[in-house]
Length: 89
Length: 403
Image (cartoon, rainbow over all chains, first blue to last red; front, top):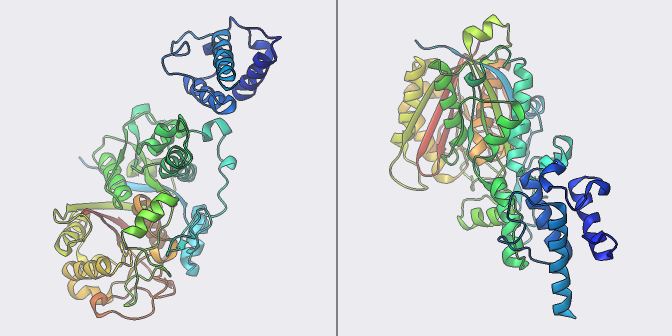
């Protein structure tokens, strides 16, 4: 989770706003389950990330487990975003 | 041993207003809450009118995070249930956790379905909103009522089209009367005011283009409404012991199925449901002072209902006022049994006959005193509230004035 990467920073900002958690708490190791949000909140956040960044997050990807960390979430979104940019470039 | 059942709380949202006092004032004043539909683009429809709940601001009732999971239907159910519980407060105090139940109408979250399908089909979205399923599920309204009010006993939703809420209240009545529950919150909510549902109703050719005129010879069909009704039902001894305000006593419930047709009603079967309600209540037909009719203002319903009333009440029908409040707040579908029940309880408690508005011309097929065009003061001791749903599922509630 390269927080100095502007793309990653944008993703972190978006997640922070959506789940109502301060950015400083969104460290790579933090389990998403410990952010005080429900599993439904996470599903809605994923849906909004798809809409915001024009990507499709697969149901069977790295976010399908119960122990997803903030780092896994952000990196996965960043990878999908980079892949998409590669396609359209 | 069976218990008597008190109605100790009322809640409502309708085209007449967003609480019980506004609903009552509208009933008494003969207000017609039907008007041009504002919430849906009806420019491509012949029928441009409906009976909308106006001025309802969801954010005044729910937190943003909570709101994402509630269809408009569930929002109405929760708000009406909160009103009823507040009215009956403190109805749950001292009651064992599992002896409070919630029985509501089952209504599809039509707005969730409509919004999501539009995005999928028309706008080519990759996915619908992930909360489409919890918002659309027909048990959503009763689940949210249990979460909001803290109910932990028997809770479920009943589907019988336009009788759903009457079946729900009747079932809750049975559960309190039998001693299974001390308190039940019951009722139903519905909002089918979406583009897809309005087009679907229009396709069925039952909508009036220009108003709801039950029992009038020139009646032209029903007007879709939205809203919710909720009641708190309570063991009478307990209600008396805690000094609760008792709005009325629920005394009987009658049910029948036509077993004939998916839309056309059956006179004998509707009559049977009314008769069963009277028998259950131990009331003779002559003891009934008011009938809150199903009265949808379709040609066939009103004629069939008038015939059924004749079968049940005979000569007493000449002295029996029968009105349809759908002329004021539209046909609220799965909520209508609850809203009509609230209307009937108010009529008993306040001593007046709600009117049938829009009445223009007597119909020999509907020879009734339908309380045309203005409410009347009247002392009512006992009344019935009838729901005769599509598919021939009938539910009639009998209620008596208390005190």
